[in-house]
Length: 479
Image (tube, rainbow, N blue to C red; front, side, top):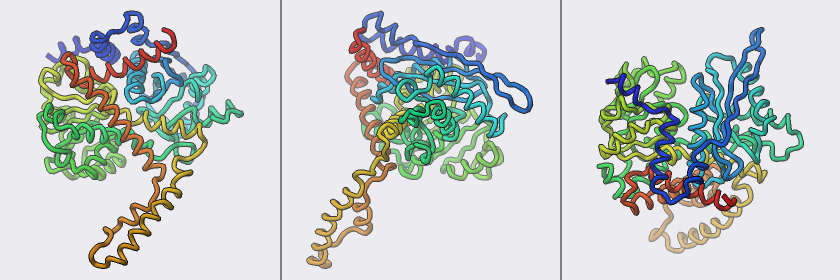
């Protein structure tokens, strides 16, 4: 049975194309324009050598540009042994539709380097990253107004800082050099809240979903997020932050954590911080003291829960296990964690799926804020924060006057003054902008989902909204 599933299983790129085709089949767009939107504009393969440990090592990297209906194009760079052209092109297509859905003014792009970062020391990774950057920059595949990378699997703030510095060395008079890449450390032109952004976006997406009782009922759930049982696959940056915020701020319970070396389960809820610390120190969940360890980690994806959050790899839910998935609500924190075959099986079962196109768009949204910050050359909040505090002080002074006049009959709530007086800093403004973006994008999907009988799920609704926006951009260009 497993062999049959493997034979029939579409590739990641085929899954993206199948989902695209489902949506455009319901849209009134000319055939030529549909094809223009579907195809990947260009993919560049670079092969370069770096002298390491006394000999030359040759590396292969990719940068794919799916759509330039808006520029710059945007998308992360991942470091992984399995990186290939098909994967990069599929991810760049997702970026096009993701950016359109959340209304960030970018086309879609993606990059990758065939490398296992764990095989190299930090100084070796820096040499490799700088040379990869050089190969991309000299082809204008990294540029503030043309192509802006970001972190992805296997990369983070450190690599983005190296990329930004290498670009600046090659473009010494470009005043906007820092805007060539996002996801940088805050001290190197980054923005507060970028590291948590994708996980925070998952939280905001779930909050918005649970604001609509009709949608919650479609998933055969009730109430709010409090006490909902969540299984999360992958406690990396995205999974960790999503789990952290959903437990600490919304009262949900993480009853299962699936990692590469097994899984942990606990019906009363796992301590996310403690598990994360254990993984950091030991490389996996095996040996962790609390909860039950399950050797066959992927089997925990099939356990009873309210919400399943695949937050790491593509294709973890596929034809081989989709019919055994019990979660009534799945939110795709990773890119492409459900294959198109699995998506069809789960839809027929009545499972509600919040698609990756929307659910993990927090990263590119806050990357957009960082790009704008770099181009404006000023920290968010710097101009208005103290003016806000001065204006709030007028209100507090008046309330304190009433407090003195009325005595015990009326008084301010404890901590009100402190909270009200504090003007919004950059982190609060970023979170506010992200929350607004996730709410607005969900509502645009929901409107299509509920208005059309031929749109059975949120994924198709998301594609329809995004493709319509891309088509409008191309029409404005005269296509």
